[in-house]
Image 1 (tube, rainbow, N blue to C red):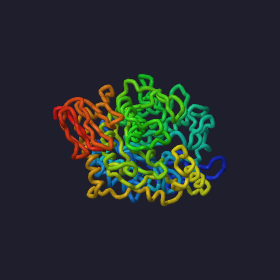
Image 2: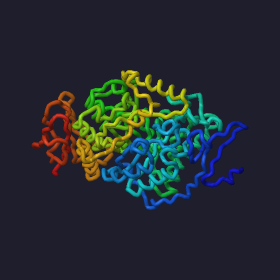
Image 3: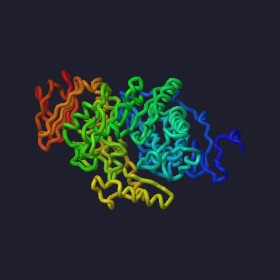
Image 4: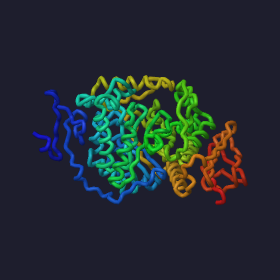
Length: 543
């Protein structure tokens, strides 16, 4: 039959040069998985109810990262939609979905996707995803989608048969690099830009989080990310909705989020791993792997004032100088967090912070994230101190590939000193099942106090303009390495934390009134505050 005769709901294949049938590289739906037929979708048929929706500014955002397959017991778009009221009541403004495009098997993280235009069949397919986004907007929540443009997964990856989509001139840790600057790359770039536009236009997403942009290799005069940002700006004007691009990057390169007029790529924000590492290493004794570069209060203070700790400074872990100074950039160009899927799932046992530190330290970490000059982000279950792990899991049907993934996982983390036998098998269904977020029970402790703590911190951030002021030159940080305290001052708001094993009297920059504390033992006295061990207090001038 002719392509023009295809109708919604019809299944089809492509046959190249008389070979076996393969799915459409731009397939909108793969109901039988990555090796099955493609299915025609009419995007205009869905009845959206969000015509008046407008996302909040990113500078005012509180992000919540979730994995659809483990966020609920059912692991579907529709079941996730049932929890949106809880997220809205917490004060979340933006839901960030880990990748949902088609990937091999029934469950996985989604970063080995191959059908970039097709929502995963086990989650609920195209209409299920649209229902989730529409429900988010009805609940007052913006939605950001995680997309992967640096590589594709190995299983079901037929893209190379259709053209020069990959190149041997570069390599990534996860597979062949995408060809963005070689012969034939114009159409490759078009393929990826069209994918981004699809999610924002046809699925009504409010933004994209772009995975590992340091593995997007492009020596063109106009970098792919710059082209993508320009095309998103054009779409934003056409649809009349605010759209954002957030990068994950290991480069510490501020040019990613510098405006195009100033010579940057024009992305809106990037994840700040330095802030995470500095905070984690102060709250825990871990110093293996990249944590070897962190651990001092001075590092945390620099992260709070400068965003990057490594801004051209020598890195022991990398054995070279790393990063570049972020000059004249707002803190709202950076996303700060205590946990995310990587920092949790790429541990040997997928331990959350709740499994590595006390409830008291969880409260300190939350306060620093939500009072920092960055866009705060929580990872699913963080707000209640969930103790279920989040581990790396796959469901490859190719037995040989599954064995290779399992073996590779065990050898990947030698730098952290983790024993191979301690690494859960990604291919074992139990690894996926134990990663399901256990029921959130606000009536039980310590979940109740942690949920209320996060709710109050988010409310404070929303109520106090100084806490959403991204001007880093207005951030002041004082600390004592020996006495293990730190004071963060932002306008009239001062956050003071004590991580010493004993109580401490900590000087204040000016007299303030206590407006929030993690312990009843916090006492103010003129220009000082007495804090019990592992506690945090927030004060306001003249309150």
